[in-house]
Image (tube, rainbow, N blue to C red; front, side, top):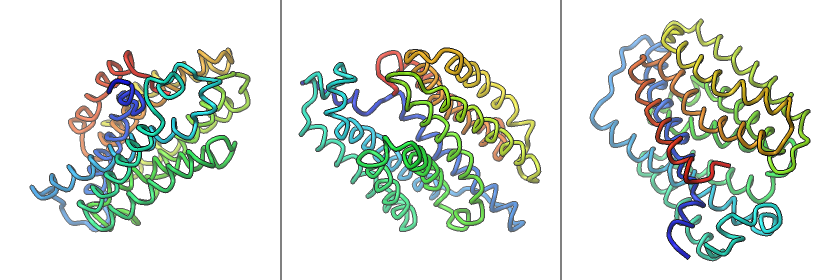
Length: 302
């Protein structure tokens, strides 16, 4: 039982998608508050320390949630995914439980290091992730909604260093919420296929998502032209795979669409960050995409 097996449980290729949420939320909250209150906002050196703890918190919560996902799916994976670390025996169940608990508890504690509010949000994410893994995952409605809530709360965690942003910029949570519901619906057919109606629903949600992003153009502090190149890249990654999954309900095609959709979260965050904080900030987030693709060659995404 090597360390690589436990690293596989943490899905390294997915980690940048969670960190991208934090960076986007961190940037958007400052610009958003400037827009709402008309006061110029400048980041301070102390904010970098807060960002550090927020990134660590998101890392722990996300990877811990993924590890516990495999723990709760152990019996099912013995039938459907025997090649995974736990059913194959390359990682022990007790070791995975210990790792998952350490990561989740560590993520919550790092949240409290940032601030009381951040810690409470981190606790919410931990509860939602565990509830999803234990109860909601296989439910056609509660599963996608719960997972969408986890991703929205992760964005909220990134925005939490400015408490006023949490309530004032609530509409920003809707975008990752809708997108993750779409991806989760898609993933419910990645083992056996035969989920054409869910793929249709995912495509409809993608259209609604784009309408929501277009509405951001009406915000004075959101520069849509800065976001546009990233949005085009996002659609170029996601749309063809969604359409392929609709035309061909083969599990491999669906799995590829889910994998690409998850990694495309980085581009989605980059597009919104660019609109709020400038192209440079969007490019900074986008730099994590090649890393995710490289890691995805050696580690499972779904």
